[in-house]
Image (cartoon, rainbow, N blue to C red; front, top):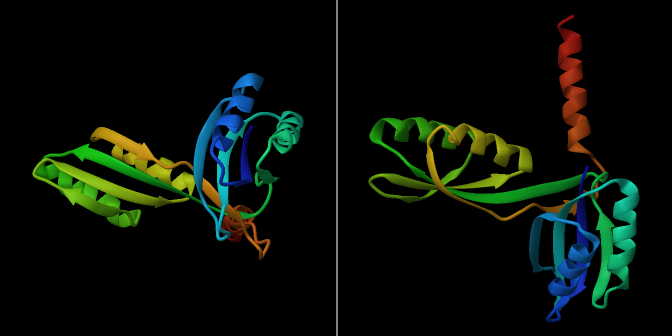
Length: 178
């Protein structure tokens, strides 16, 4: 199972290296990693996606706390949160394909950030499902390059889990048609 971990760290050189070393020593792969400053000066947030069962992730969190410069570690996996990712995708197109791709761009509310005679570079921001869906749709064209940021996330203070809401709405729609 994939887990989303949010790690607050002091901005000191070598912190990311110590964290990645811990993962390497334990034989873990980091599927996604995003690092950036927080609202507090001198503090950064690392959001990482790692695979493992609940027990293994609990052990990993305990090991993270043993590292210096670690302030807080949270497992967001089962918490209601806002998740976003950014993707840039470069596509080689002919004139006929350009209008079809621009239709997809509009549907997904993506942005064209660069255009030339034969290429488009698109910027797509959204939850990981949206990023996956548009990448799948655009895969039928000649995609020449893709760059993705990795997932970032913050816990929803409202405690509203939009995934549960989506499932509830879908089940109520199907119930209404019976």
